[in-house]
Length: 88
Image (tube, rainbow, N blue to C red; front, side, top):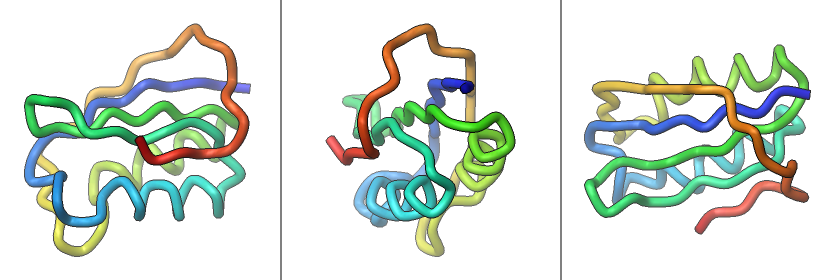
């Protein structure tokens, strides 16, 4: 089990980024959350199998069609694994 906390910057709010992230995470069997931050970025917590989390982190660099991702910063997260994947 691997948990990564990622901050995604760019034009990522108002383009269904969080909902699209939840869809991708659920397809990969990942639990966690996606939430908007006050600075215009999105924070994603992704917990699951190493390969699945790595695949989601790669997807975050692209995001949904209307997003323009400029930077993704991921780091290991030491936290309890949440149940399911939520959009906050």
